[in-house]
Image (cartoon, rainbow, N blue to C red; front, side, top):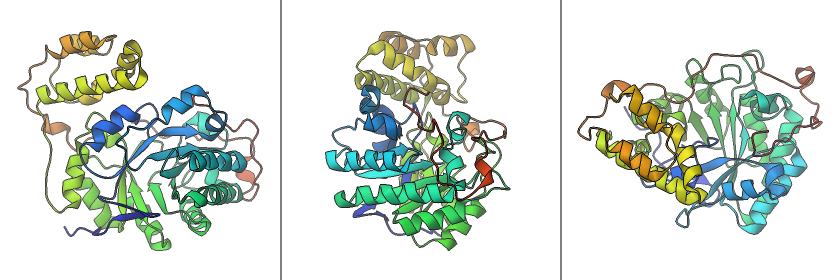
Length: 379
């Protein structure tokens, strides 16, 4: 298979190689997880989604969420917002205070608490509001030379597709690139990603297009870029419990084949380090260990680990407890090859998309919905 991507991804004055992006994932892509992933190879490693209102209001939890490691030389921040003015204020704050080197705008989140407020994957349907948000964000970032990108889905459902028009609007607004998760909001994380839609968007736009959806292995990334002509890939659920996937991706874009297959002992060492990094980042051992619990099942996926030990690991409250339990694993157990190429993380059924009342009535209504803004407490 011929590699379709042979040049770095240009994001403003920055050149990214390999053209691989860690998708922002709430509660996952904090500084600890990004550290593990960045050590595996180059790319763009995006922090958790940050809400514009909370950033502008300097909510302490939000300010902690945008912490970057001292050696992160391309600090990437994703913002969620529904109000163009608030979004612009947040971008201006990032630019003026030097908080990040790249801003991505979230128009892809399909969860009900977001779409019912008109945000995430619901927002591009209101094309004028979408255009205002992107234009004002790009304008606010321009004085600092910060590139702005957008990440979106195909649309609300198959009857309300928006991705090509939204891509063109974003391109006209001056974005550096567009990323497409090739599912609708209605699909959520079910079924198969429609890579043909990525190819369609690539043909419609002049700016770089990044493909997202169903990249479980480096070979999937190569198939995607060959099939779609995409300028790079965005990886989300495929790296859960597998930060070493980025080493495989770096090798694949360099034209070589590599597939990390760590033993259970090697995985246990990474798990212990991940937990330590979380404790360090959160400055609280109990909180850090509690935050690490959700990663247990992903790291151990496919390994023959008994239910009692899995349950104990999922209840840890200290690093010493974690180290003791990890010591009970057989370090010689080989990596379970049967888990390769399999979906990871959330897998759910399609569902009706929650939308504000009358949301579908007009494409050109650019009124900001009442109560549209979120904070970073999950509210």
